[in-house]
Image 1 (cartoon, rainbow, N blue to C red):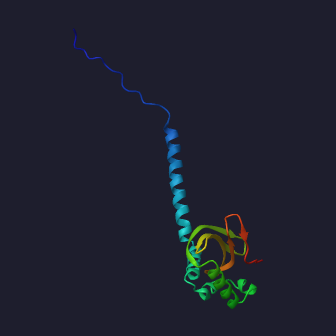
Image 2 (cartoon, rainbow, N blue to C red):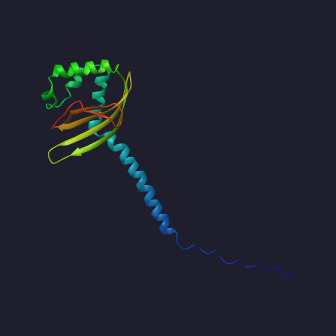
Image 3 (cartoon, helix red, strand yellow):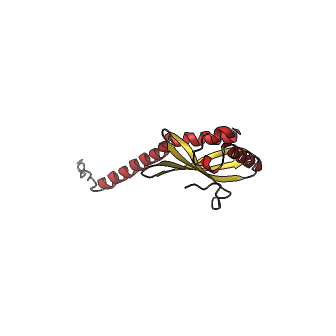
Length: 163
C-alpha cells in the first residue's frame, strides 16, 4: 500500500452572482436611505411645528391664540370673535380634545404659494374625527388657511370654503 494522498482539485470559484449581490446591495441601501429621508423630512418641516402648536392651543382651549394663527382670508369669512365662539362651541359639542395625532403632511406648491396640508386624527371626548388643516406660508411663518373636519375618513364636512 502506498501512502500517497490523493490530490484534490482546488475549489472552483462560482462565477456570476456578483452583479446580483451588487444590485441587492443598491436596493437595500436605497430603501434604507429613502426610509430615513421620509422619516426625517417631515420632522424638520416647519409646518409640523405650526400644526402641533395649533392643536395644542385647541386642546388647552386657548382659542384666541389658535385664531391668531389664522391667515387673513380666514378672518374674511368670520370675525376673530366669531371664530373664537365657533371653536369654543365646537369643542364643547364634541366634549373637548383628549389628544391628536398628525398622520401626514403633503406639500402643495404653485408658482406663488407654498402650502402644506396636514391630516390629523383628533380624539374628542365623544369620538375620533379626521381633520385637515391647510397652511399657507406667509413670509417665514405658516398660517391656517382652511380647516376641515370629517367624521370618518370618507365623509367630509367642509367647515370653511376658501378661494
